[in-house]
Length: 156
Image (cartoon, rainbow, N blue to C red; front, side, top):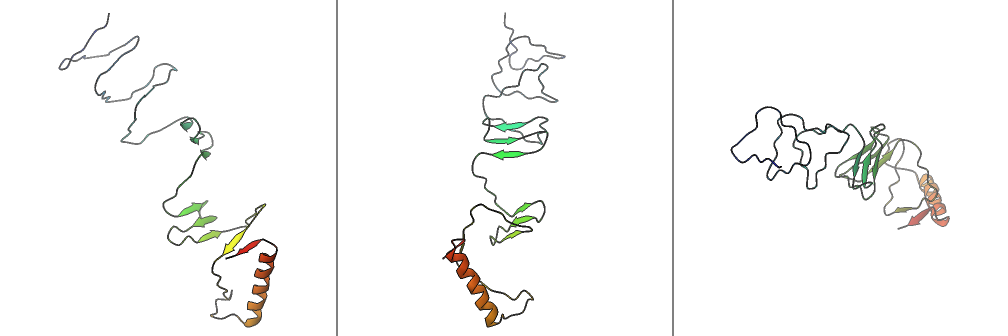
């Protein structure tokens, strides 16, 4: 037989429920809410956490759309990952500047197929001078023409 606790009434001390419990309204827990068995705590509507959430095991959203492996921290995103700000991999190993779109890679970039489209090109003197002599410009233009001719780079 079900027992009811109505508004304005309280239970002082421990409450042990064997079987299902239905709560109509809000449930406030001043302490820890935990499952005393290996059964999951199931939330069938939105879950709002207003403080830090510590998750000791794997994290999965919609089964496999966003996952984090607890043991390694490896993260899988099965969709578009939008980054609203600068992107940095391992400090400065690979960066994308949010304001300019400039990309810096400290190392080699390897690809089976690599096509680059150049809309504007600026040839600068590696020593930082303001000009590059005509011979250097001719050599660089020949390299760019060869890359376009072989399909490595597309002309804008």
